[in-house]
Length: 75
Image 1 (tube, rainbow, N blue to C red):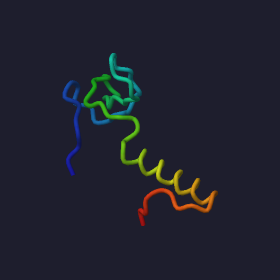
Image 2: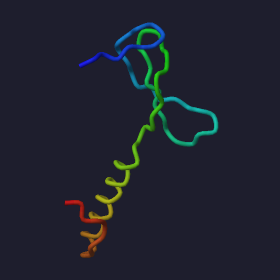
Image 3: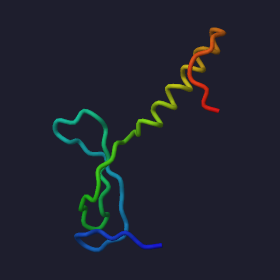
């Protein structure tokens, strides 16, 4: 397997740091080199698929409390 390197300092260790970008209203992480702080990528803090799955589980739970079938079958 190859090792990813920072294009600025050749570092090989990275971290995710929450960032605010002007004009963007969602939570984001900057993936940055721990050595020099050079940003290599920006990703959403919460991916859409995980959020939808979590909401579906909540709907299923609420439906069970009222004896109703809510949510999507994911099994």
